[in-house]
Length: 243
Image (cartoon, rainbow, N blue to C red; front, top):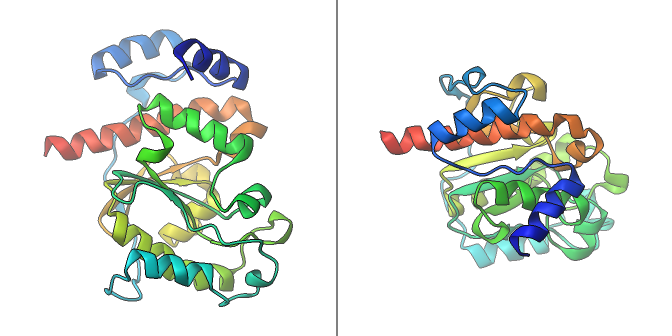
């Protein structure tokens, strides 16, 4: 996709062109282009959530994939087409975690495909990232029937798989996509509105909570909040690099 095609795509999706620049450039242009002022975005202290890890042992990657593919720990294996392990760079700096596969994901065996996946790709591109340079996974590896919310026992059955993926990838930052992903990763019942805009912590990895791309497609006026979240993520990494 060339630059003109990309810009046309962004315009058609109703997504503003976001380009990561130096802080002084970003502040000056954001004041002109966005209803949100840069001085409204600040980096708070990290909020540490106590997370229980089931085991310190790291399962070899291929063995982990085989375990996911053959898993029968909950009833979802009875209705799935296939499991959705995850996709991307196994040594990525950025890890994105969503809720569960939908119908298209169940059919293709890959997370975030279809319109929501296309929007996610454009969001990543606005940060100078590509789908293959991050790692994308879900809380659940199987699709719940009719895309209903995951049940507690289903989440528990899959929790060790995600823990192992995080250990393998060892990302520098995690973005959670949607309420269910955020609440379950951080072990909290707080609303996504309250979780957004703050830097959380999972296994000493900073976590930024974002809206799910599917929600943004239904509520396009909320897309500007994604820019805030991405800037917070970028600033968090910059702060870590600065020591």
